[in-house]
Length: 469
Ligand code: ZN
Image 1 (tube, helix red, strand yellow):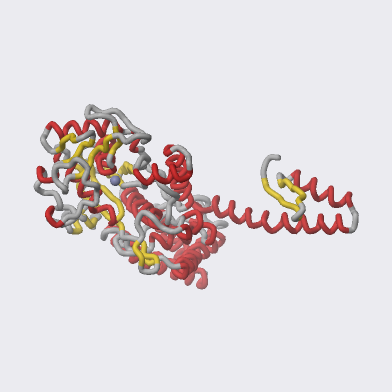
Image 2 (cartoon, protein in one colour):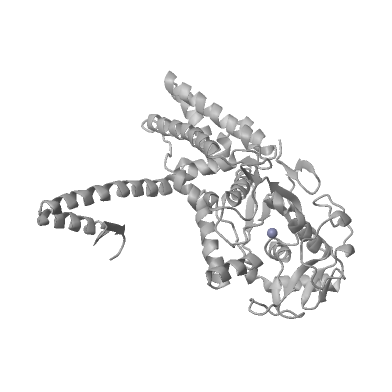
């Protein structure tokens, strides 16, 4: 069976037929880097990482673009609030996103274009739209003329007259029109264009960057369900009106629910990825985010996260025991188990080919783990080897290989060890000082210093940190 994907635009699940045989080009809307990533961002990243890994495992040469929107009203607002330059805030948050992706074993994109680096491409696209009568300049802004594009609304399944445009009215001719370019305001960053200085509108950025790297027609455009309208509707309008066929398939991941409340762009701190990773292993977070079907809603809960950890632990324990039993007699590479598609069970392949049915694929994975544990109990090496290879291949495809997380896990368990040992040594030092055994207290202090732990005596007691003095 060939890979079938759900396409928002045609409202069908249909066979994946790429523009170029053997290759797959994907553009996923990345973050607007106004703040650090929360679990909603992470869910989208994991969903499209699974798509990408599955296409690669299926033999496609994958090009994966994920942009960074590094100029935007909220970036300017938040930077003003912190009294730092807008680009410093954008850079800091871009790094926070990269850290979150890395921690969750999301593969780095083939390309990661930033909006502010692609103004010439945006000017060129606006020029094409103005020349063809689909856009106009007004009072320093440039607008898309929605009425000039009859199929506007097709992606989100709406009639133009029923749509609400939340944008400010500005100088537009029709309330439905949307801004491609915003004229310069005092004190805001600006770039020169033939229509005056200003900064890009969000929708224009993605059309310009996608075609810059993937060409006028490419395979898959992805993003969260909350982006269908207006963002993706406007991307289709801009690119098609300019004569570009644009994306063949539109894929959208479901939202993350937190206590019944839909998450989109802004949310409280407790669901910031860095905070979640303080209380849960990255393996468990990735498992939890990737386990439901990508199009369904995900109900976030600490209980669900704990269940995910337990499920993942069963896989880990099996792989560890199997590796111990198989290693002495068979040549098994336990250091970097990777997806080996020829070892994937047929039912797993069928599930993934069916619009990435991860819930069914995980069912096959856990069944195989159970069969492997039975093989261990029965001392059946051949069955064990088969189960081991299959589980290794399946975890690789899902981005859940234990070895992929080994380094971060080692880092965090070492941190736990240090956090426990240093206070114990400081207690011993305090006891030595109390009995006036200064030779011993100095010895402990020197031993800590030699290990890179710096101790500072304060009225509130000894404080410590790791690092250069
Ligand atoms: Zn976008």
